[in-house]
Length: 300
Image (tube, rainbow, N blue to C red; front, side):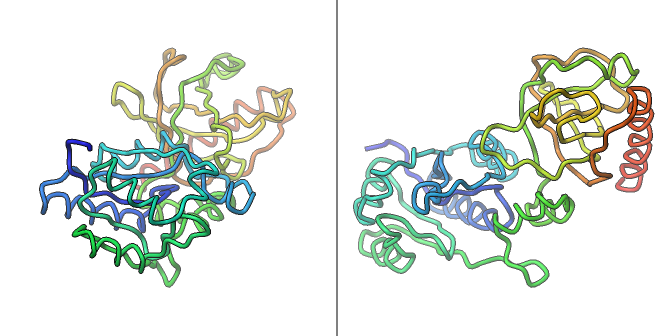
């Protein structure tokens, strides 16, 4: 039996959007009321991957979800379960009883569409009945809508894929992010007078629409820089089809290789293009920077 008592939100939480935020805020509220630790339980693999045998391109990696939950909602205790066939085929009552026992759960918070256990037979109605019988608190949070549209990870994925990053961020409640170690690139940016940093999306994570974005880069020392970011295959200089995320930090000079960085996508500027020369590419980066500066000035 775990020593600490938990109030826990159950779900996958891809993107950690505003709908998820309602669960997380309620979990913190209940934890404070009963003297428990606010916690989150999620899965490392999206359940649909096994249940429906289809890959779901994720908005964030598990590590990024954990970081956003802590940064935006102040919950440090995030527990991940490996979603495999054993978990998928477990009877719903066994699943919840194991959780309650292992994590010492005193209160459970779920979304309106949450289901669990074999064939999704663990419905919210069954969960509430189970909790009532065990003296465990339970909240089922209704769907959240913006402009008449239900906030969902599926809808946000569509927005990110289409390049409508501002609306995606509106539904997320925070900027769409990529966290990664800064990698060494072609060093062409330095030669062009526009030094850049290179990052990559983890395997299985959704890649935004290829093109140029106004963005912000947060470094591991807490410093923040406005930036212009290109997502794509770098057709002017690239010799493979690997998607690269290359950011030109405005008003920064120095070496960031090996440093941790968090990139926030803010607005889409233009599609990715192939230029006839490196010089032309360098000039375009400077023109993009001008547009980005105007965006940041307007957003102040």
